[in-house]
Length: 388
Image (cartoon, rainbow, N blue to C red; front, side, top):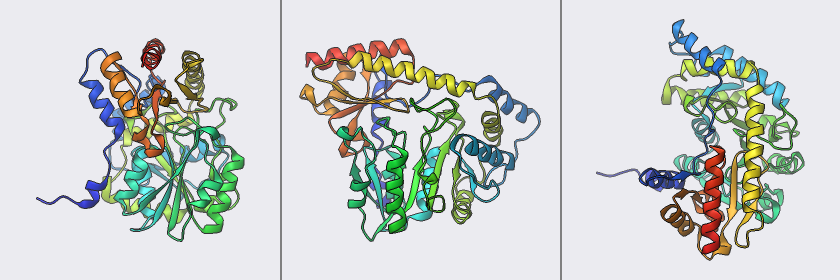
């Protein structure tokens, strides 16, 4: 029986490919999944448990429980210094990926182009394709620290460009784009009437920021709040990946439309996750800073382990919890490197082409997990690379 050509055009996640191969092998050190090693703080868990005991398990408003939206507005004011009306400009979503799809499907029509800085998180191009749009990759360059570059973006703009996807701190590179560069990109968006879809799920994991401060948001640039859709999530900030809870921040005209789409996709967001999210955003932020400090220490493990290697080059991360490693000096392409590293050394990393062709020649490793496993995995990776 026939299958939709649109669905068949959606690429399978290269991250999932490595994850599945790692599960099929024995005694593997997996550095491939972007998931915090911690779990949600006890006060967050207790808020969900108490909500269940109190019978708060009914459908909620499609845009989320009012208290959740108010908590998201309060958090955004405190941390990002941006003001959003919880009644009309905020929507709870089932995690960042569904929020991303809702955002893209609301502003992208069939045939529209979406600029996607590459390498990129795999859901970006998949969501654009599912909406009938055309992803237009713009290379992020190692010599620029994998930062977004306004001149490169502007060169890719056409009369079909409808949106640009912003991701800072970036996955897979960990790069944090400066407020100045975001302001240059904002000028392009204003001049060409382009939407910015800003994936900010790693906003709290920035290494040169003061405690409690976030990575710069393009929504703060002049003229951009009304043309930016922020996709955010509690998954990374509060170690709540499996809770599947996040939110959109956007102009009221966008939330009106994303709410309609969400109604037909999932009826409402998990109520217990929303009560947990309220506790997370309004409660103590001590865990957020503790997590950030742990990632700073683990990043240093990566930097130290790869320092001085004659065949490996590291794009030193500035945020998130990923390292993007240039393996071209080994003479292997990144897919072969990843496969052989798993087969011969039992270490799982993701080949760079999983994040777009511009990632070819690199591998991504996550340092979010156990520190001792990270050290041993890096030792094996360097040994393998230098033996090759």
